[in-house]
Length: 346
Image (cartoon, rainbow, N blue to C red; front, side, top):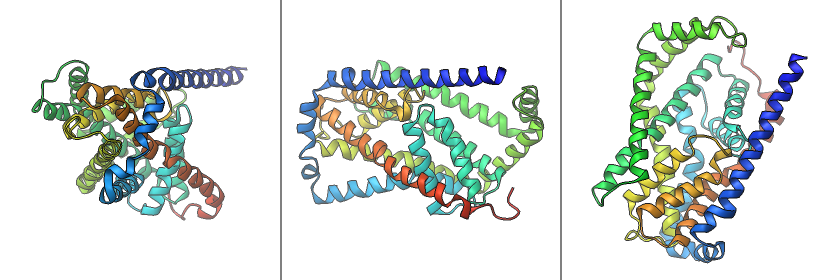
């Protein structure tokens, strides 16, 4: 009976999350985004996009789009010895599709990437370490970007309002996260306390102090040997996404005189913060509205061009990986029995 009640509770929570997500997406695309510009004007702005960039700009946009499909896997390659580039991209596309389609997909994608890496014959400890390190690195970049972006913008024009408040909050969270990270990796005491706490939870199992201490030691070792490569890969992925946004805005006619590099970076950083809480899969709807609003606040470009640029950006960064990930998931499920675990992997 308790198991049945628990199952109904989980099902009810999932249904509630799905309902809330659908409502938020509908409100964003049917009410909030059209408040900036009508979809008819947006379509007119999109039609001559490639001609505005010219041949060289179109080639650059294509290169950046392709790089965006591969760049998220660079941090996993740096964090997980033994992982090949092809399998890193394969796993990244598959988990991105789960994250961007299924409500609560971020948590499910962690389980999926664990299963895929295990099927590739990688050890449990190395997988756990890579998931923790890349996840923390991604969060630190998101929290660490708004304040420098706003300071860059401040050198060109006065800054106030929601963007300034968000940048200060992000900087405070970044400082807190760095401090907490330093405490966790500095010695075994914190890992032992957290492990004893987890041991008291009925669903967590036993042996957590030893596991967390092993994870801490392995993480420190990884940062010592591959920290620079990991940091460079993580920053490169975010920088490529920012460049993609810039090119998409230029493609729809947003000139540098109305929206320069610094304002776009500030809006980009704010948009990433808005989607920190996974209200909808992949921030669908929330990202489009938040990013458009931020761009409107920091520049003087026409609203139709801003909406068109944001939608183009989301089409190539959010929607494009979905069919690739679906194919990847299908291929993994078909080939999983033949991939298997290498003898001696743990």
